[in-house]
Image (cartoon, rainbow, N blue to C red; front, side):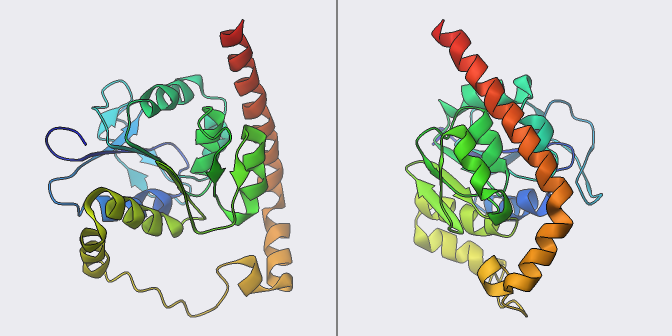
Length: 237
């Protein structure tokens, strides 16, 4: 931990899925004394993939020492997979950050930064197979813990991941108090939060609707994996 208050950094970027970001934010901001930083290249407003506008609180170059660095997901991650500024920031900061986290497809960004090699990781079920492109072992679990790496499934799993991190840092009772304070007691009206629960027909229909997005993501992942190989070759040479 840092000397004073716990310091949490959440990456913010255009076309982020806001709940990937705001779910963990709500949990982490309730840690007594916590400082939560929303990090991006500039302090200009950032638009989420559904139109919500969010203000960064610090630039990447101004980011303070962090106890946790968290990357959310969203359609905007495709551009990040080959964004040298962002990937360099993550790779450099990961070495001095106590915990690292990827929410939903944010895990793929960690992979593109070279931070998932030979590690177990999770992400949204529709993008899970892409993890292997970055040397990770895909795991079909809502929260995946590999030492100090915490990754999660799609969107709502970010709340679970953040609670697990709080429990790791401050103990189970601290996490329970926060969970109770936000009345996080999921009772969804339908058992459709996973392909198994939704069934083959609903899953196939959704995948058909997602096909253009997944094809674009496959191309972005291939480009990101290729860029990572080139960076590693350059360092080795």
